[in-house]
Length: 257
Figure 1 (cartoon, rainbow, N blue to C red):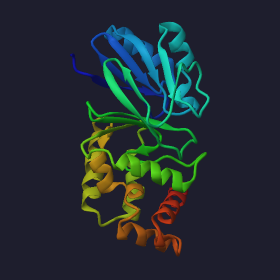
Figure 2 (figure 1 turned 90 degrees about the vertical axis):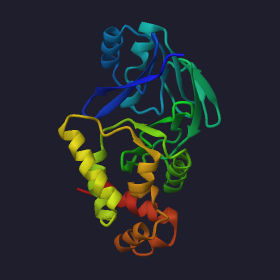
Figure 3 (figure 1 turned 180 degrees about the vertical axis):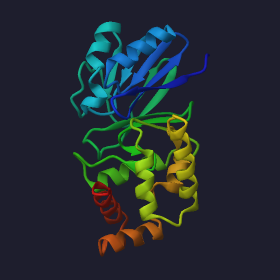
Figure 4 (figure 1 turned 90 degrees about the horizontal axis):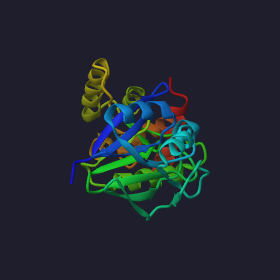
């Protein structure tokens, strides 16, 4: 079998649409805009067979209808959300096969109520939409801190070498916040330097890995004493539990300049 290729397609200010290809067959993750996808398919001479959606926000689904009509591609998306043109409604525990790759579906609510992620063990990759970012996590538009924390913990349980494909280039801003929370973290300091160099070269800072996120992402380290202490200094009493630490960090990040 030919190897799976994964290519970032840039959209809007900071979105990544992920184009997957094996041979002449392709799939796209979260196509908020159809134009970058059409250009890439034409350039690479690929046939779009599938569209995978993680959640319902417009910058993730805006191109779905046009792509489905143009290529008759099958649309996969979360069962608990309204997804345009959806053919297959998915929930955690489901599995699908797309362009020769098995994806296990994970429920990861928090950013939205029905958000899902797609994990391919054979490729050691997870497409997590706006749940987990490079050194950060999504805002809680529809879910609770407890839901988002549980979602991040389920992602953290994946093998540490799993590559994390999120949907936005937010890493440098997230690292600035992480350094305010966890300034003594040498792994984080090294990540800050590496990510800054990537952006100077015009390179994406993603994918990262589950191992790197566990080592540097404060939202995945709410059980670490230094992170709890930082949350408690910000909001007294929040250091007493993992979920209150997470909630304090998310509130802090929302207002972080």
